[in-house]
Length: 183
Figure 1 (cartoon, rainbow, N blue to C red):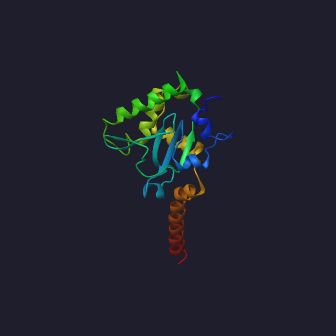
Figure 2 (cartoon, rainbow, N blue to C red):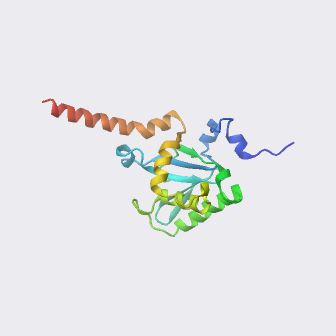
């Protein structure tokens, strides 16, 4: 009997994750994202980001001198962006995992800075180390934009967790403004 690759089990033929794998938070070769309370309610494109190993283990720069493993700083992922391991310069999975490991080790020695050196920067370093898509220009700004464009919500509940606070806050603000402008 042929050996089955773990990623074959986790993906359907469209490249989407199966429900049972989302339950276990396994997103191989993915960037994952979750909202940050208050901040994401006002700016829903800004959130907490991590990068997964070839087996789907999540690594994220969760605070100064701390890179968590499979326990994201702000909860389970609500979005994932599946990357193509064939765009890694080198030996595919081995290069991917080494880059994620090396970026994580580097960020264990850094203080967290919300605006300059944060979870997005950690993911960018991993992508730069693996020369993903033949580039070393990954940064927190392009990752934020590309994650917004390419990210898929893991479920309807995750979609609402991401967008409902922003929609409600916008509705309250709009109602407030209209109420005072109509008098």
